Image (cartoon, rainbow, N blue to C red; front, side, top):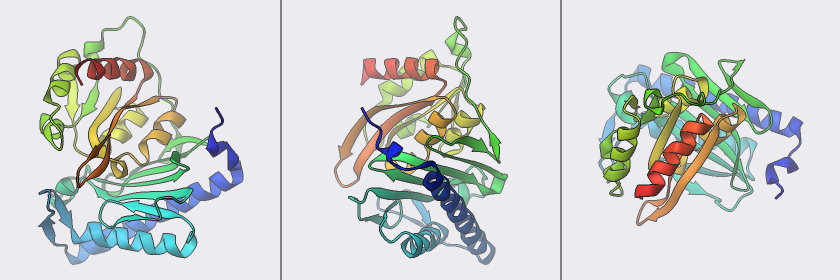
Length: 273
C-alpha cells in the first residue's frame, strides 16, 4: 500500500518542518508575553481549565498559518476545526497541560503537528519552561534539542514489570468513557508506571525517559505530533481504538514507545476493552 506522504519530496518536507519550528517559536513567544503581563483562568463546559494564554496563543498560530499556508486546514483545541477536508491539516494544542501551566508546574508543552491526507507528516513538542523540544518529520528523523534520537527495543527476556510506562491517572480512564478496568489491568502488569497528564510523557517516550506511554480516549490535538516523532525515532505507535463521543468528536486511545512494550500493553488493553 502506497504511503501518501511519499508524494511529498524531501525538500518540501524539510521546509514544512522548518515552518513548524518557526511556529513553535512564535507560540512560545506569545505564551511568554502573556505570562509576563498576567493571564486569566476559567472553566470550560467540561470543567477543564482554559487560560487567556491558551486562546491567544492559538489565535496567533492560526493567523500565521492563514498568512503563510492559506490552503491548509487547522484543528485546534481552543478554536475548533477549519477546512477539515484539506489535504494538509495543521493540529495545535497551544498549551497541553493547562492545569499544570496555571499552577506554574513546568510539565506543560505546546503540540504542533502537520498531517497530510490524515497521516502525520511533521511534529513538534515544545516544553519551553524546561528548555526541551522534540521535532521530526516523515523520513527525516526525530530530534531532541537538535540531537538525533533513537528508541531501542525492550531487551528480550527481561521482566516487563520493571518497564517505566507513562500514563494518565485512573481518573482519565473514567472520563469521557468508563475504562477503569483497562487502567487496572495495565498497572497490574506494569507496576513501575508513572502518572503524567501532559505531553511530557510523549517526549519522555521519544527520548528514552519512559519505555512506553499511553493516552486513553483523548482528542487528536493531544496526539498530533506524537506518532511521527515516535516512528521516526524507531519506536512503535499503536492506536488501540477510535470512538466518537457525543458532543466531543473523535477520540483516540494510543500507546507508543519501545515496540515490545507497546505490543504487550496493546494486548492487555485489547483483552479488557
